[in-house]
Amino acid sequence: MKKMWRNWTVVTVVFLTMACGNTNTKVTSEDSPTAGIIHISVDESFKPVMEQQIKVHHSSFPNTKIEVSYKSEADCFRDLQQDSTRMIIVARGLNQQEDTFFENQLSYPVQYGELAYDAVAIIYNRAGKDSVFTFEKLRKILSGQTATTVVMDGNSATSTVRYLRDTILHGTPFGPNVVAAKNSEDVLAKVAERADAIGFVGLSWIGDSYNATQVEYLKKVNLGLVECTKCEEKGLYARPSQATISRGQYALSRPVYYILKENATGLGTGFMNFMSLERGQLIFRRASLVPAKMGFSRRTGTIKNAD
Picture 1 (tube, helix red, strand yellow):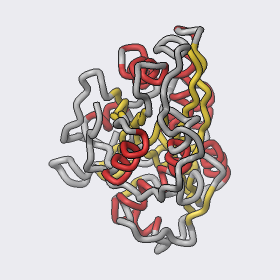
Picture 2: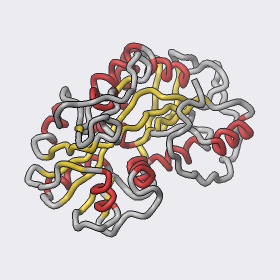
Picture 3: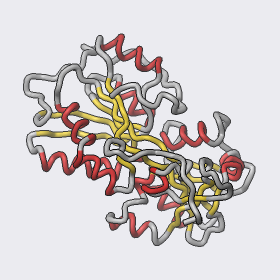
Picture 4: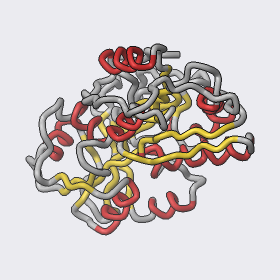
C-alpha cells in the first residue's frame, strides 16, 4: 500500500532535526485499532470530509479519540517529524528523499497510499464574467498577466498553492494579483463579496450537496469550467464533480493521501483501514470525492457538452 503514484509533482520539504526524544513511534499496550488516542494533522483543504470521517469513526469506536489539527500541507509534513503526530492526510505521498529520511530515523518504513481523489475547484462570484478557463488562460491569470484578482487559501505552504504552481505555472512565481486568504472558508467568503475575483478551493469545501453550508455558498459563487486536456475531442470543458474526476475529464484533480508512522497495528492502522473500507469510502463518495479503494477507475473520456 506504499509507494503509489510517484509521478505526482512534489515540492521539496526541508527536514529539520527530529524532535528530542525517541523517534520510534511505537504503539502502547493500551493502543489498538479500536481503542486509544492518536494525534493527526490534516491538510486544511480536506477539512469538511475529514471531519465527517472522524465523526463517524468516533461513533463507531467510542473507545478511540482522534485529535486532529487542520494545517497547511507543509506544516503537516513538519508535524510528521514529531513523535506526537502519527498520521497526516495530505495531497501527495512521500518523495524518495523523504521516504529514506523517515526510514533511517524510525528504523521501519512509513506507510502511505491513496484514499480518494479530490479536485481543485475554481470559484467565481455570481456577478463575475470569468467562467470558462483554458490552461493558457489560467497561466496568464496566475502569473499576473491579467488584472483578475486571485484568492488562495494561504501562502506558499498550502497544497493548493503548490499544486497550481507545479501544474499551471511549472514552478514560476505567482503574480502580484494573487492574494492570500486565511483558509478555504475565507476564500469562499472573499469571492462571494467580490465580482472581480476568482478563488481556488478543494472540492470538499464546495461539492457536497448534502451539506447545508456548502449549498448556501453555491448561492453566492459558481464553479468554473476547466479545459478537458485528456478528451479526444478538443474544446471541451468540465466542472469539478465525482463523475468528471473519475472519467479524467476535470484537469485539476489530485489524490488524497494518508501517511502513517506505525510499526505495529494500532489506532493509526485502524483509522486508515476505516477510511479505506466501505464506510470510509462511502463518506468520501458522499462528499463528491472519488473513492480510491472501491473500484472507481480514472480514465480518459469524452464529453458531449460543457455540463
